[in-house]
Image (tube, rainbow over all chains, first blue to last red; front, side, top):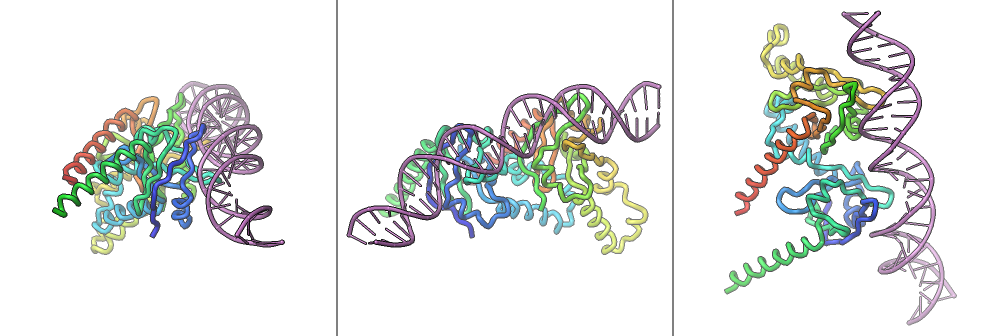
Length: 155
Length: 155
DNA sequence: TGATATCCCATTATATCCCATAGGTTAACG
DNA sequence: CGTTAACCTATGGGATATAATGGGATATCA
């Protein structure tokens, strides 16, 4: 099972390139497509990302479901509101260059409000890309909330 | 598994030609027919498209289903009202030119209300061609709906 | 033979390849 | 045990390749 851990902050260079942290790349060495799938998070101001096989798993599940229902028409018609279809349209295939960098498309830069530096945040089976200062805030809030709950629970 | 991802906006030139995005063409390199199958979406103001092998796969499944149901008459007599057969009649084979472009027939231009620019929208196992501004609306609605569901689900 | 579609070549912006360097870490070795 | 060597990661930049697009010339068809 591929697994993304820890947080790394890297620079976006003048050509828009940014190094994917080596430990994350190491989790993707077995992927056929050497690169990442990335799309704007629908829940947060960040980019969600993982390897191609994760996406294909999603895709195959949709197709299999249609076919096993005998509803192959759905493959033709699509389901305009399906989450998977919406994400397919938003997702980008970002290949690694020889040095393990990717170029983030403008749409993703905007969605996560990225600047010169980006934070790669491990989330287990996927990872996220954040504006480092926004992530700090988010993280502090999350930690505070957990501590608050612990405090209440322990009294 | 061929898979169409992301959204690309390209121009229709004065001769009616439009480049199919290189990543989509790359997903079709193994196809016998070098081009796309395209038909007006029955669900949305857009063009649905994929490679020939996907069409053949669907065709085969319809035939198999008729035969295993013992409904041989359907194969011989046809079911003019079946979705698959209706789409067969609406579909166009659009070959790539040397530069990977296709010419969209007037019927498809009309169906999707296309103008000088078109959006190629990856949908996993197929892709769509939209008027870019109409697609923006559609996509924004879809994202808003998903966010709404997330918000409700998380409370 | 006129209209439409196909082939071929040119152009420009962008992305990719390749090489180079700096810093840090690990390995090797006297 | 300390010093040197080898390596890897992140980063930078010049040269090259590719994608999208435009347009002239040729072929095809009714």
